[in-house]
Length: 76
Image (cartoon, rainbow, N blue to C red; front, side, top):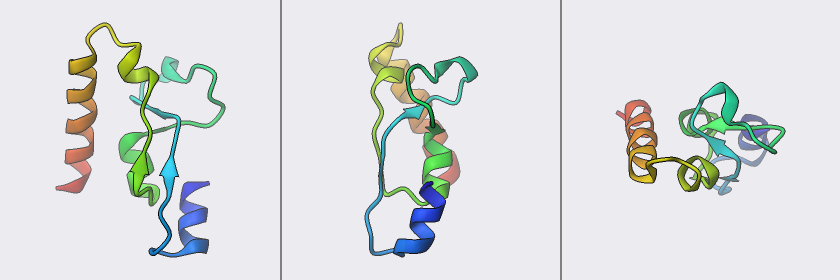
């Protein structure tokens, strides 16, 4: 719904998108609708909320680094 909300509400409205996942197929968990960080940003998110992909990772610092590189890749 992110892209639809962005289209309907315009650029001035801040969209905070929860349920962000790393993009791995098995990382959905209990969320019915998820996006990767790049997908959410491309759809129009201003802010993303990331929990389990970092907190549940074997190496949280590496999980943050991977997600940061993914975001940087679409912003450059």
